[in-house]
Image 1 (cartoon, rainbow, N blue to C red):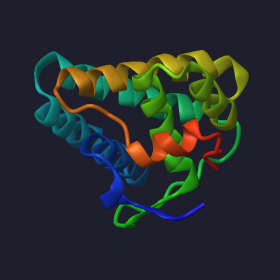
Image 2 (tube, rainbow, N blue to C red):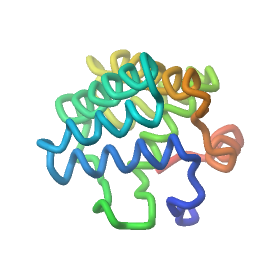
Image 3 (cartoon, helix red, strand yellow):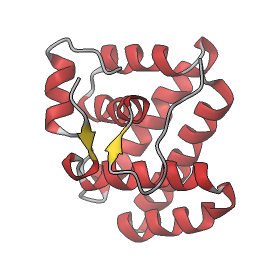
Length: 150
């Protein structure tokens, strides 16, 4: 699979990736991350985006099926696991439950899969409510063509 760079992502995907990397670098930075999400999305959508991303990160940390590979904050490339996380939110936005389930199986243990799917759906809905829909056309086209995202 070709290397995906951050500049190919939509803005909601970029800020989701930034949030994940920033959270991994220093979890005490969550107030900064939450504030940026609330600023970008505004109002209720901003609060929902921040809370649901916190849930996604918590589910990945507690229920990971394996160690999730993420790059450092300044890296311009997107890791395969970061692509999976973004792909899961994109699948939720597009209503592609089958793809979402396949990605959840890759990322988390069975007891956490439904919770991850629900949290990703709220992330997607929050960005859509803010007028910033989630979804990279190239990533979704690859997934629909039957390509795997790892």
